[in-house]
Image (cartoon, rainbow, N blue to C red; front, side):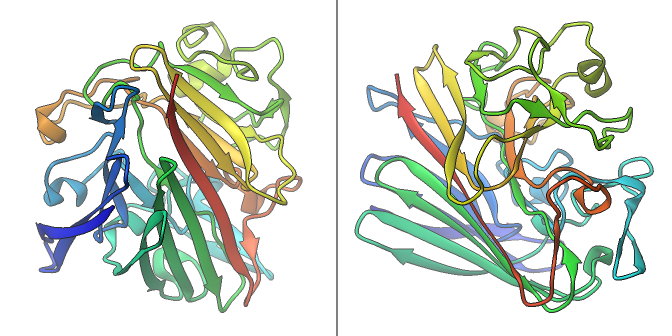
Length: 352
């Protein structure tokens, strides 16, 4: 096991960024940068020990300063969409940046993936940890309250990448943190993921309007292309004449996870029969956003000059539901002063 550090470059604001690589006893490695607490690469062995980078990304720091599709990103203060780019707490309305039509997406153009973080690393008997921390000041991005944030990634010798989100506020505020990594279990540059098989433990999803803002309803997945309760190919129903898929140009939907919320439970599984790699996801968060990378653009800054195309990757983002702060009947993303946002997500890799 090892933790290494090297220079990654200098930001436009003249801050020095570094890359940190955690490598476990099996040769699996995860590389992060303190610019944005971003997952830059994830080398995962197959059953023969051959390691492949399964996470989309860039080679250079300056590309992450743009990063229009949030590759590998730590997302906050609010992941996903807030309708009308505003919300109300204690009778006061807070206005946010409208960076997605009339709505706010991922906190705004300057999200948590565009900030520098303090770093600490730890080595345990069977795991390696890297901890990114900063204070998001009151009214940053338009959100009230100073938010003391710690984002911890742990790589275990069981080939798990554990994500621990912890944040405490000094004012009532909205918090919804997630990771926006794009996965392709055959390798980041290997083409379509539509043959990957996916299971999501959800009987319902949250339908949206044409701007991808939830209507507030819970809809049954049974008998629809949204049914992933048993493993099926991501591409099996993606071309169906089904309004939610047509609105999103593929999958970009929040699933209502069937979990107790009292502990970390298995909520999804991704299987690539070509590489024989398997990704299981465990969490105690209430929702999971399935996104099939519907809007990759041609960009020569991707890793190794790869050409990513739409649906060459899949995001599985654990979260509170989109626009939960404005929607009665959804688990609330509003936390009180002194309370903690404290959730865990586990990406567990194995082989068929």
